[in-house]
Amino acid sequence: MNCTRCKLKAVMKLPRHNAAFCKACFNDFTHDQVGRAIRSESMFAKGDRILVAVSGGKDSLALWHILLTLGYPADALYVNLGIPGYSERSQEKVSRYAESVAVPLGATLHFHTVEKEEGAGIRELAQLVHRPTCSTCGTIKRYQFNRAAIEHEYDVMATGHNLDDEAARLLGNVLHWQTEYLDKQGPSLPASVDGFAKKVKPLYRLTERELAAYCVLNKIDYIVDECPMAQGARTLLYKDVLNRLETESPGTKQYFYWGFLDKQRKKEPGHAAMAEKDQTMLHPCSTCGQPTTADVCSYCKLIARAKNEVSR
Image 1 (tube, helix red, strand yellow):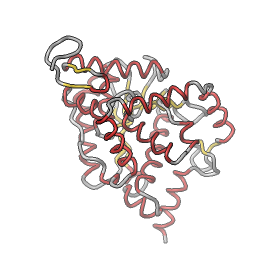
Image 2 (cartoon, one colour):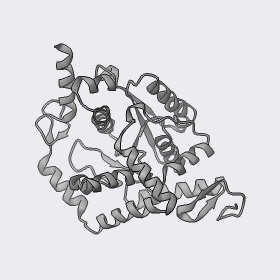
Image 3 (cartoon, rainbow, N blue to C red):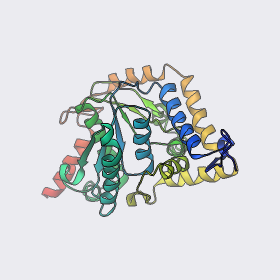
Image 4 (cartoon, rainbow, N blue to C red):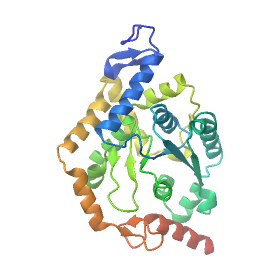
């Protein structure tokens, strides 16, 4: 099997593109896909300050690496969730990459430790507030990523969500007809009000398999294991269904998600309408000041409830 572009020996086959690439051409392909995503969605410019949410997994570390390689000023934030064994290993992967690659390029790695700042690890917090662990985790990470981006004055916050993630999320939203989530699902969410950072997903054109290959080929060491708290999550079921369809018909995920985005663009001015709606509904949390639709934001409610349970 030879490379589609240069005819050298290929190391990666991409059925959805009916192509195969050598290492150099695969890297070019990956960088080109991210570049297209950034330009087509007007995610950020070369001079913008970018904060990457890193977890130690392949997607977020690949994203940080790609942005630095393309010349973007990208720092990162790692949130240690306090999951015994898992969090220590994932933080080690992030720290090692930062020390060997990112910091020498001028990047900064920020840390937030849930056990220290919120008073307990994610599993204990979920038990205290009687909520699913993934839901509790999502509330804390969204809050802390946004807080860090605003406090450190970053122009945009980037996450490592890939094509598999977005297609699975879309499938779940369609199956349950969650129209409010469908309206806001996209690769770029503008900073609609003060206190909200712009959020982007530059990897939405690349699959999990492609990003894993990128890490292997570029010697980016990442934590392979899935988060132990994610076992039984519906998203994993949706991904499995889509993977089966992809095997039978390469390009299914791409057609599904990109087709959705194309229809969303034709509904413009979508972002303008969302911003206007947010400005009407959102106001500062009475406890922390971050935007919320209620008097107190979900994060502050969660922390207050956990403290109340501890004091009983």
